[in-house]
Image 1 (cartoon, helix red, strand yellow):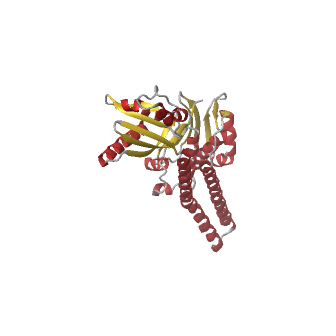
Image 2: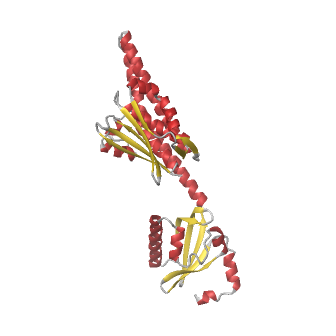
Image 3: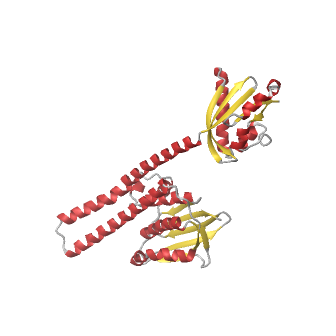
Length: 362
């Protein structure tokens, strides 16, 4: 350490002119202590020597998430131990570092050892990593959409084909023909709604949509939404109980919330028995705005709820749900995540289902 400190001023200036962040550390009384940060480090990453005097201080600031910090720390310790054992003088890793200047950035970190000194260079690879992650995300979405379409759209199309084939071959009287036309109409309408939902979900996953902040007068907004379903409500003679005060307001993206509640209300109407009641409520606690949609329909088992909430739509039970139910919930969960919200479901067989939408306050 003394030999390093006694180096001529030109060496220090050379280190300061390196085009990438760079630090030097050594052990002092058993603690890995930083003894030099170049100017590029302070300018790009944003921390000064007084803020990260030791390696542990660096870990706390660079990796604020405790779980990720433990992963990085353990990986670094393991790599250094392996390098020492193999007689290597350097280790290389990649990490997502929280910088004061640009927030989270991906870096390739190379540590070299010379005597008691450790030299650490940081190469920003954020653009490369983010591009790779984006390509991975798009590929996963493509596979997910193909899976959804193959699973959920196939069933109603097969039903339509079977029904129309029967109509063409059977000798139907006028009443039977009208009955089957009505069935075709309902199946085609359900398939169209499913396809529209799929397209909305696709757009939300493939485009970087920035949520808006609309001030909604919630009771008026809900009344307008319910008017869309009046024919379905009247047909099943359903009663709606809306426990939302006239002065209740909510600041969120109105279009996204419309997509979510349209799916939830459609499901509640679909699964409700004729002459039953559907409840819509709103409450607010310190952390969340909570909207509930509760029906008194047939309900679902804990197995189905667990499968739906964990995107396990290939189980036999879930496959028997009406077409579009799984994709609708998937859409709701995904777009709510973009608002910092979440969706929860509680259901009991023969008693009905309650779906709760949690949106952040503020």
